[in-house]
Length: 359
View 1 (cartoon, rainbow, N blue to C red):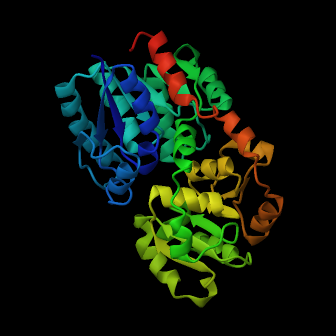
View 2 (spheres, one colour):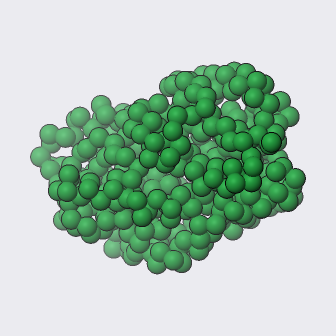
View 3 (cartoon, helix red, strand yellow):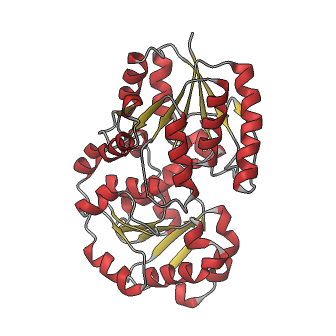
């Protein structure tokens, strides 16, 4: 029996596991899930894994927080020991986290074949650690699964065509599967009406670090003036920052709530009039659900959304945010989902693995 190790470390990576795991198990592959512990808040990992039907990971490296270098190094040390004991036939990793890069470095040293899911995405901003992580991983691994045509083009331009294929986006597979199970009870518990509220998520350092508190305030003050109540399930890492805004009457239209479950978030995304976010995953889900999506990034990202008018990026002050909001339209769900593989990424990845003789 072939053995695959799937390495995850952050909430978005968990959400790309279930459907592909099911397809691999159907092919007779033994699936071993390793959680690095990069995200360790219970609602960020434990409850999410239960909702996704994954249960506890087979191995938890329990790395926890730290500087980029320290966290990456600790993952490498502990992951190397685990992989030497398991001796997998290949490893799968997602995205652009420190867990992603650490896995690429360890597998390359141990000569274990690595598949990188969500490969080829580029912001073209090397000041962002995620950009460095994804570029190095794409070049270190043996196979790249590109979620969209533009990502495949990026890989080809970097000389990686021979080991890269267009598969679609695993996050969409998961979104389509779990959208029917979205927990709509969250509307009643938060006193919301569908299409009668905005949804906010902010977590990136460029928007939430203490040094960028004025940026955080500028974004929230703009959203507070949109004329709709807003709900903000905040990331655990900004709990201290949020405390300074909760009791400020100028932000009264915004309701700050602790992080919600994945199935509750799916319902909130689907029911929101506008989703304001700096999450790459949530912005995709908002577009796929037919909600308006405004993204807060320093640089253009998800360029296909921007070119098709399916989302807008707001980088500047209130005036530019207002202009972006005026341009916002909801994407046609079927068209936006087709760009990302129409929910068939898992089966295409399995086909790729079979064609390469990995399974």
